Length: 90
Image (cartoon, one colour):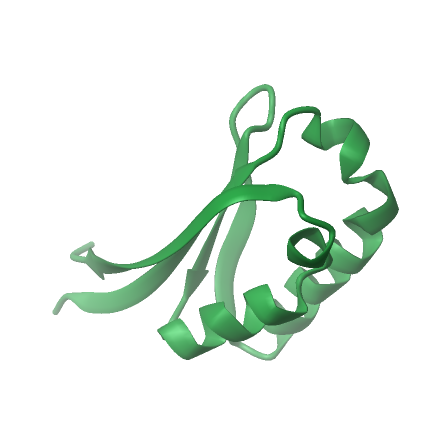
């Protein structure tokens, strides 16, 4: 049976690898906490070189809560973000 999940997409600013350094520990700790609480299923960087992030949640409220706490968001390291449903069939 298909499962409806929510994808949170991040598009990062230029030079993200350098600019994220002061905020990276807090960002990774937030990911670890949401995952441990079962609120985030998976997440990580996208691209080589890194140009964005992709995170999977069971509901949009958890994705929004994650963004509200994310040090990357507070530091202005995103040029765009979006939450969209993902209908997983396998």
